[in-house]
Image (cartoon, rainbow, N blue to C red; front, side, top):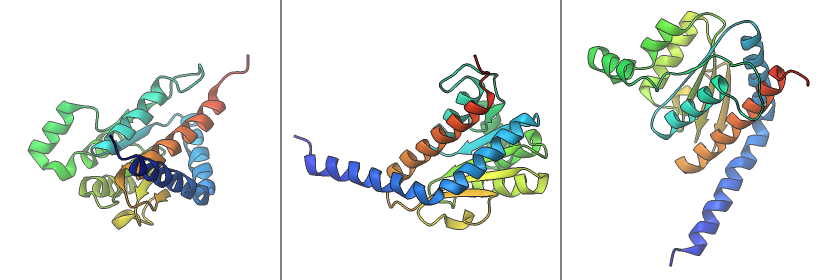
Length: 192
């Protein structure tokens, strides 16, 4: 039989990670307002992450293009981790560290927003994407974990989940994404 106590501890740890988001409520609200303003100005959102964080980036972009809970206009969201041909081409020609920064250089325009997911805050390819975004004039939302790593203090907005386990950080990041989507969607749903 599975360890019931371990299961209960994992749930408790997840609750603790989610509770930590309350300290970032103001930042999440400001980021949501920034995302809404960017969309209303005709700009787009780029997202990026590695591994499980790539799944978070994909999820955010597809909910923007499709819908979250209500019918509304499609909003331009592009997950930089989605195009296998771009990733392998850039990785082969420039190295893995450049897989996102090269796309930011080609796709990003001033006024766009780059949303970066990194549980460590130390992923070199994510740091280079952040640097490329700043050079171009993109605002950035960094969803980080632990202490924020090297990326702490580098984004326009940042949410740091101070949990020790990667899984708990990613669960909290998912909640942040859903909160952002709820706020964004409300701004674009036409009253019936």
